[in-house]
Image (cartoon, rainbow, N blue to C red):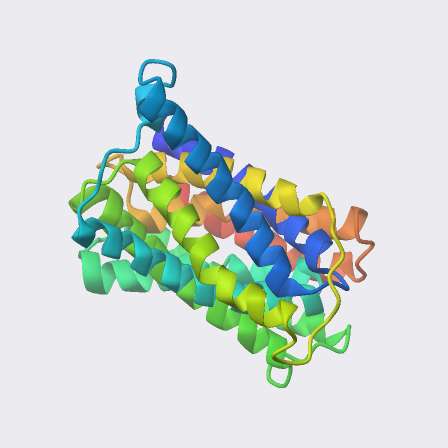
Length: 298
């Protein structure tokens, strides 16, 4: 699959994933949702790894996960630690904010990825790509005005700060993904398998703390969207990791294309969760689309 097509398919699954987050954490405890969804993902990969070890010819070679050194395990554990911080921030923000607000904010992630790619990976985007990033940031400003109509003031609302922190950390993770899948030579299956396993391990103490009431917290309600969280993330991330392995795929471009998920999440927020002010937010979402198109043309 060409990396542009792969990025867009990944965007579809990512949009569904964001809607699943909103459904799973709405009026629900966040930490158990994080732990159980990642436990599902880790279980899938442990099953695949066990099957491959017992019946090596049964699964495609693309799903094979080779043995790793301690240094390689540390590299993948570091990615998981970064994502733990990003997801805690993001999930709590999505719980308290409309998804039609959070998804376009998360779409500004490529701007931070691009900045990092310029500084760290020495990537050189074209003028159209830079223009796309600028339009995305302008759309973010427009979204802040639309949010104020719902009483969400970007400069005062702490959850806006949380989603912003999560977005920046996810941008850093995208840069690290390019290193792992490019320079470090990991396969997409290896990164996703151990990333999922380490996430479940890192979220376990947080889930235990929630269970034993080490802090004041909300009650947990089981929802099947927790399983769908795992499924959509596994599919979206596997295709995304495979796209990043293509030497022609600039991380800034893949990240921009992947934010086409905003369209799915925005539409779902309006029609599934009945979120208000769709017309006021629409220009900002269109701005995100234009930024994505310019990135592709670049």
